Length: 369
Image (cartoon, rainbow, N blue to C red; front, side, top):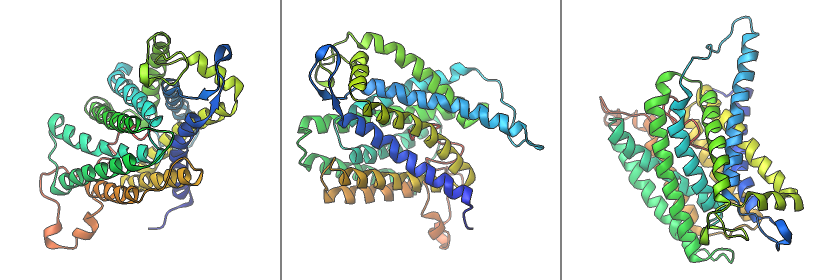
C-alpha cells in the first residue's frame, strides 16, 4: 500500500530530526570559544549541560501532547482518549535511568566519532533482549537470539574500526573509554526500557505525555545536580579549564562569546522533541519496522555528513560493521519473516515472544533520543 503524504512527512521528519539530534550535539562539541574570567579558547565540552537541554526537549513534548489534545477536542468526533490519571512518580525510576544513560552518552560523544557513537548504540538490542528474558519472562525465538549474536559481532567490528582510525583529535585511551561508556549507557537504557514496560505501559499513558513526564524529572533533577558538579573534580573526564565534572557558568560564558554554540544547542533541544513525536507517530501510522529502518538510515546520514564536513576519516571496517549491525537488528525485529513465511518451516514458533525491540506497545518511549 502506498504511503500518504502525511506518512511520508512523518518519515522524513523522523529521519531529519534524528540525524540533527546527534549532529548538532557533535557540532557543539567541535566549537571553541573563550570561557569565564578571561580563560583561553577551548572546546565546548559540557556533556551534562547538553543532557539538561535534551531533557528540556523531552519536557516540551508535554506541551505538544496538550496542544494535540486541545485540537482534538474541537473536532466533531474526538479521536484521542481523555487523559487518564496516574502517579507521575512511576516515571521517576526510568527517568533516572534515562538521565544516567544520556549523560554517559554525551560524555562519550566527546571521545568518539558521531558515526561510531550512533552505530554502537545498537548494543541496546543485546541488553534489552536479555533483560526481557530475565525480568519480563519473555521467550526469545531463534531469530532474536541470532540477531543478538550478530549484533555483538557488529559491535566488535565497529570498535575495531574506531580503534584503527587515525584521528588527531582523539588518542587511543579516549576512543576505548568513549566506546565503553556508550556500551554502559546502553545497559542503562535497556533497564529503562524494561522498567517502562513493566510499570508504565500498563497504565495506558499517551507516549508523548510519558516522554514529557520523564523529561520533566530529568530536567529538574539534572539541573539541580549541576550545582555540586561545579565543585567536584572531574579529572580526565573534564574538558573545562577548572577540571570539574561540569562548569555550567563556563558554558554560558562560551555561548556569550560564540552565539553559534547556542544555535547548535537549540538544534539539539528542538530536534529531540520533534524526533520523539515523529518516532511515536511513525510507529502508530506506519509500522515499528519502518521506524527501525528509518533509524538505520539516520546512522547513514550522520556518517555521510561527518565525512563530508571532515569530522572523521573514512574507514572501510565501518561499512562492514554497520551492515552486520543492520542484519542483527533486522533479524531481532523480524524483518526476515515475510520471506520465511513462504516456506513451510519458516512459520513463527507457537508460544514464543516474537515482539521486536521497536514493537508499538513495547518500545522505549524515548530510547531513541
